[in-house]
Image 1 (cartoon, rainbow, N blue to C red):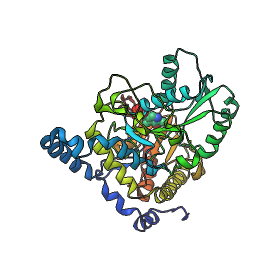
Image 2: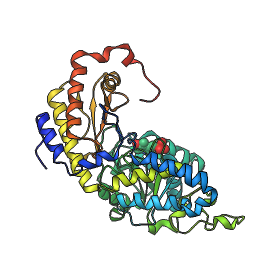
Image 3: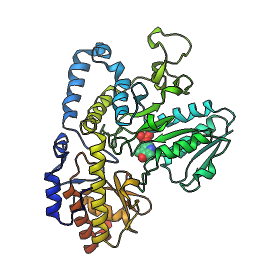
Image 4: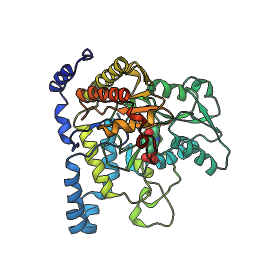
Length: 413
Ligand SMILES: *Cc1c(COP(=O)(O)O)cnc(C)c1O
């Protein structure tokens, strides 16, 4: 890796030589904003309004219902799923773009438990993103409460695995700390216990290289609106390894997951392949925006993105530690063990982030005391990381965070 720059001018020089430099132009970023929240909502690709205008005016407005065939609307979940799969090391035919991450996890976990009859334990992590735990609770309740959810920690995970373990649900990159699991190693240990591995890739897809097929992952889900830049509430995705597809039966047995939707048969027969992970009619406007978002990542390539991401997070972590001793690094210090984000702890983290946002540095806050900064290398520059630390220094020096308007909590943090 290139040495970490120690001046703003050195950051500018790195940006000038950055092989990914041109990709920033694919986004419509507001002037004067340092956007470090692409891990929560990816920015608007320049092409998205144009594509949506075409889908709305020409495809919907003029071609009307014919577009399901003529514009490939009906194939969108599989087509976009394959494009996402290419970023995740998944061969075609194993990923579908559909629904939300939460709904896809409901399908995946329900199917996994049906594939491990007789086993009654679901293992997750207490610090997992709450929706994963809530959905596991919902699946268990739906199945009559015969299963137990064990909330392990990374250290107690192995001890939690046993002959009763049916499935393990983990988020690959922790949303609050950025800590990243060793996917192949954990998957292998879960398999050794005879259980199925379900990965949540919300903070991995488009952010870090993932090799689902190579790691032998069973099932996975993830988000379209974070590093995949699909737009607010974009459809999510679900991966079902080919070897499991014949046995994969999910409870949301809607007509578009049927083997022959337009035969209108009276009984459900699941489609062959990944199609059985689908439920109802895809939201084509949202799908169209997602397709553009995914293409922005595909154009850069995951390896180049990862190299720059590690450089950016290392720069930010080093500068924040050097210039802002009031904050503590909450992410792993080794870039190989973290995703594309840096989290800093400060007792007044909420107000500090509000003050930063007011100064044009947009990150987010995660309870109770975490300042979270996402470094999406497609459009974030080294100078952005540098300037973000400078703004943070200002906020701490001026104690601007004490202002009442920064203390009042908004609905979305
Ligand atoms: C953002 C996120 C989700 C979001 O789920 P939705 O159903 O799309 O709201 C799920 N899991 C993790 C780990 C996340 O970070």
